[in-house]
Length: 115
Length: 115
Image (cartoon, rainbow over all chains, first blue to last red; front, side, top):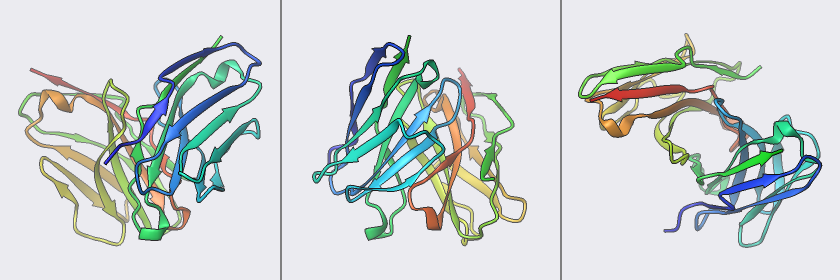
């Protein structure tokens, strides 16, 4: 069984630019969540996708957007990057509500640096 | 507000000894799940142990066990026979049963294991 993978591993962008981060869910998982983890802090929930639809959102502005594809892979897009967007972005997948299972399986993250 | 507090930013333990990490949380809901996650320097977030709020019996996974006090909203993690590989950031977290995959994380405790 393949685990959750994320790409790229590291990324450096300039303030004002746009970025796309990618996540490949674990096989059989139809729910994916994205988290932002600033240095020295716990992860903060950005949003969740279930069967290609946004299913919940944390306290993040609209310039954070996402997509989930039919194969349940996912993208996180951030527009108009700000310095405070520098963080580790984690993707987590789970079998979701269909199977009543609640564990999330995390990817290794993408380290985004905004200069 | 839904919050998780970990009052010990850093902890250390001698190899083979026992250590307890503290966690308190705040929610007005009665049905939820509690987790301890481990994040080693490799960044991969790994589920250590979980507890369902409606179960009074404390969860145990090999050397890891919890002390769940629902009335006090306390959920501490005990690591027995500490090993060098236990060195990592430990995050306490919870998820409301109604919120599917939105997990609220604490700020983390950095655990060092002394040989």
